[in-house]
Amino acid sequence: MTAPPPLQGLRVIELGQLIAGPFCAQLLADFGAEVIKVEAPDRPDPARDWGAAKKDGHGLFWPIIARGKKSLTLNLRVEAGQAILKRLAETADVLVENFRPGTLEKWGIGPDVLHAINPRLVIVRVSGYGQTGPESSKAGYASVGEAKGGLRYLIGEPDRPPARAGVSLGDTMTGTFAALGAMMALHARERTGQGQVVDAAIYETVMAFMESLIPEFALAGHTRERTGPILPKVAPSSVYPCTDGMVIIGANQDTLFARLSQMCGADWANDPKFATHDARGENQGELDQLIGDWTARHSMAEVIGSAETHGIPCGPVNTAETMLQDAHIAAREAIIRVVHPELGEVPMQGVFPKLSKTPGRVNATGPTLGVNTAELLSALGVTEAEQAALKEQGVI
Image (cartoon, rainbow, N blue to C red):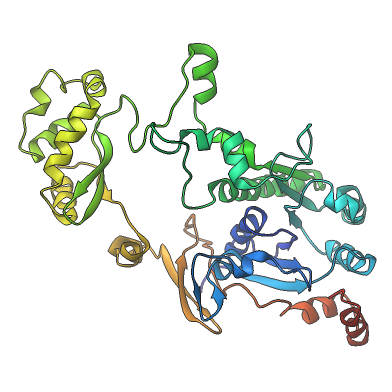
């Protein structure tokens, strides 16, 4: 018998849009929480149509970011919608929102109001700059948060302006921290009986990943710069060309480097220019060129296979196509296939991390707009006649 997922029985209200807040709620849904996605009937989440490509008119981002969630249409800009949200909050454990700070307060459903209704409610607030401070009221997307937190300055080649990753790292990293914050607040609630506010700012999340960047400057006068695919003074550790693609090789330790030299049929390990960690760092460019000259004469499979034989960390620079063909990814169910009512099976990333006794799972792709509205309102005691009136008024 399959054990229930760890968050089964937890009710989450999601008021967010696009990525950061919804990704937090996606993580909770992946592990069994009942997530109720609230959208205005006339202004659904733009994520429904997002993505670089569509299939049969369907956006391919929505099936993932909203997977496992229920859909409730509710206009929070009007008093009738706010009243329903308050009734729903009485039954919830967590509320996630990523509006601009002050929006919930403007609508009369801020933390003070919600905690008066349900003192045990954990309210997760995701924003660009946080709920306090002189910039808290500013609009803040992931791109701006990544720049303010120091990440954008470091991405790209040193002779070009800062680049960006091909995904919204600031959003998903903040969503992950927000989910972690929700779990910590729920654990604290077990002792205190009280909910609290989790304040997750995108730029602060980015700063948390900046390692020793700040003290390096403050205490040693060192400013990290863009370095392309390498880590300065750590060699070899870079991207190398093959006849049919690219691989990553990391062999900067002395023992690994000796094995890499042997693999490439060279005597680099005994060359004073490369024999020590510091020497390899000083001659990083020359060493990477030598390794690249060797890998460029071989296929990716040949390089990876030889590296495995020699015990050297090495792997492919994957694309979506090659990930779908990767045997290890398949064996660990890192890509799963979830049935969509119109698209059939949709491949997507699986549930992470993997729990040995109470694993998470994905039961459904993102829901159609309002599909659970009647069910959820009926459970709150809203009659069919009242629902019809609310729909006529544009509340649901």
